[in-house]
Structures are given as structure tokens and as C-alpha cells.
Length: 376
Image (cartoon, rainbow, N blue to C red; front, side, top):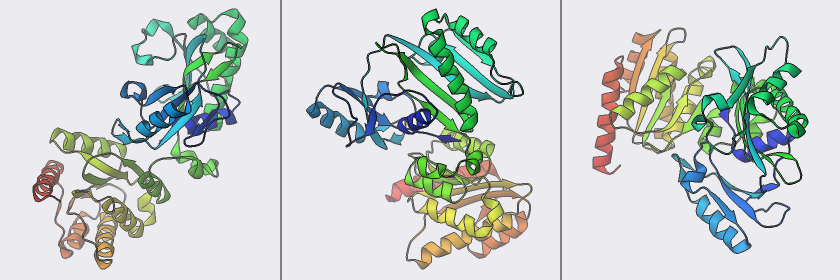
């Protein structure tokens, strides 16, 4: 899944017929007058509470606030950019969202008459939603049900229907997992404007969208991982991790956190193993280039060969040493097909391997503590 930054999400909305405030990435300025809003661009919520959004009334205030926000870290993420946007006085605020409901196997439209707040804090009875049968598509009765559910005024119903229809159509056209507008504001001219955007894209559908990689942001590490066919996430810990599968990734994060560790850059191999040991070696190099205290390789394969992974690990470490570098210590836990062969390959390179998850996590934490003690 790819999480777009706000300005990227708004570009997607504009492409699909939505109105958004005039905006630009600082130090550029939008083509509108003060007052403006300076917004931190991070792939997490809670920007306002963290001080990542500031109202500015003149150039001096803009320079001060934009510089302050650019140096922030929010939710463990460095601010990647500062978005300067037209400030629009809202006459009313709504919440609207289109998302893929995996449990029901269909798109869902959600609306609420209380926008600009965390939707989780709104009582369930004030939120309206309809499931859209993908074989039938969005129909007028579904829109009417949503509008009745939020008590939409009659004079707004026509425009709100257009917004909800565009939202549904954009979800399908863009292969998105979720498109959330919060708030959708009604301005003094009677226009409905997307004041914020949270967009999640299905990365496996990228082949249907040529050029999407160039549009999608992320850190340099995350972009490099995508170019290698993997999923990279840059966190702020000192443990680099290479894993396969979402379940394995979450279990590893949970266990290391419970033991007092903190994961930093991580890669989920995704479809990498169809490309052989060479690609694994490149990922090992990428992870170790982030200068972690330790690299944890936690792999379980039922259908892929662990000896290919082992060859990639050994090759990646050799390249770093051949280039004059000193790679961080590595802990390897692998289990599955060709496990004995993988153990032999790693052993010949002086790399111990275990098939015990708990034991491996303990080794990772011990190595982290040693690195901290040694000042590494």
C-alpha cells in the first residue's frame, strides 16, 4: 500500500474533478493572497496537535513557521516538505470517504456532517455509509441514502451527489484502497472544496498506471526499495529489518518493541524472490547503507528457496566489504524450503543462523545493547 502525502493526494483529486485550495510546496507560494496555511507533509495524522499546521498572515510569519515546520519530526517521520495553501473560511465542514472494504469485498462510501475532526471520535449513529455492489455500480438510491443519513440540506444535495460520485469513480479509476476528504468544506461562494486529503493506493496495481512511481513520494530509502520491487518503510529506530509477508513483519515489529528494541528501516520482500539472489543482495546493501546498529533478516518461505536468500545476504555483505565498508552485525533467522542449504551457505561465510524466532529477537536486542555500549 502506498500512502500519498497531502499535496500528492490533492493532485490526484484535481485529476478527478475535485476543487482544492490553491497551494504550492515551500519555498514556492500559491497564486493567492494572505492569509495562508503552512502544513507539514508527513504520511501520518496528528499534524495539527503536533504543531505541524500553522496559520500565517504575512511573509515574515510564513518564513518563520515554514522553517520551524520543515525541521520537525511528527509520529516518527521527518517532515518531507511544507505545503503552503490558501486559507478558506468554512461555512460548514463534512467528512467523506471512499474505501475498499475487504471484509465485504466491495467499495464503501462513508459520509458524516461533522468534518474536521477525527472520525473515530464521532458517535457511530452520526456516520452514514453504503456498500456498493461492484456488479451494479453506484446508483442514485445509494447516494440518497447517504445524504439522508447525514441530514444534508436540500440546496447542497446536488453538489454533494457530484462529490460522492467523483469519490467513488476516483477510487476505482486510481486503484485506490482509500480516498478520504476531511474536511470537505463549504465556502462562502457555495463551493464544496477538499481541504485535506488522505489517499492510499494499491501498489500492486501500479502496472496499470504508467508514471505513478514518479508521482508518488516517500523517503529516498522508500523510493529505492520500490525500485527494487520491495516495500520499504523508514522508521526511526536502529534495527534494520528484512522480512517477508505482512504477518511476519508485524510479528517482528511487535516482538522487538516488546523487548525494548526499535525498528528503523525495514523491507518486506514482497515479490523480490522471483528475481533471485542478486536482488536480495541489493536490498541488503540498501538496508546497511542506512547505518543501523544491527540487521535482522527474518524469513520464512514455504515455496521459495532459502538458499537463494542466503546467497543474496552473503553477496551483499561481500560487496560492502569489497568497497571498503564495514557492515553492521547481522542476525539471521530463516525457516522453510532449502533451510539446511541456506545454513551451510551462511556458515561458510561466518554468519550464524537460527530457526527460532524468539532466540533471534533476543540476539538482535543483545547486539543493539552492545552497539549502544560501544558507541556504535
